[in-house]
Image 1 (tube, rainbow, N blue to C red):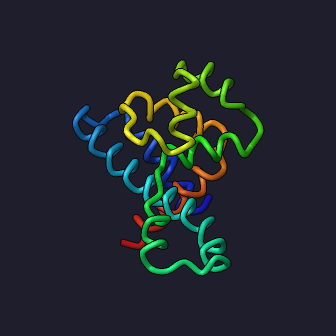
Image 2: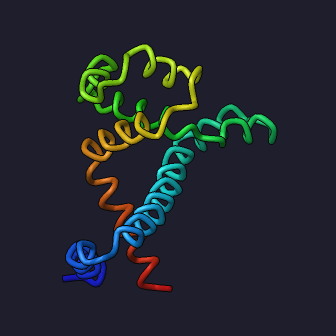
Length: 143
């Protein structure tokens, strides 16, 4: 068993023994790292496009501000496992709201709505999140 897998196993076992406030702080820390990794993944998809189109610095900055929920929904749709109507049915979020998010018209989602999208994305992209967790744990081991 690798160090990373061992640490993940220990984390799962000891997570139940932590006080509620420490669990919340740990979850916030992990969520922050996961979001940073996802933003890097989504931004990297635009790098090749930016090179082809040869954006100037101002245009590049605008493209770099990734709207995380918008990209997650697009990523879910790209798997062809769910349509927009399917995401709406699964998450109990109105399809119009999701459509506005995908089109960029609505970037201000509630925490609860974002959480539902995040959870669906995790269930679909399990391997991606496992890789992100391995990377986070490897960084933790090095520090």
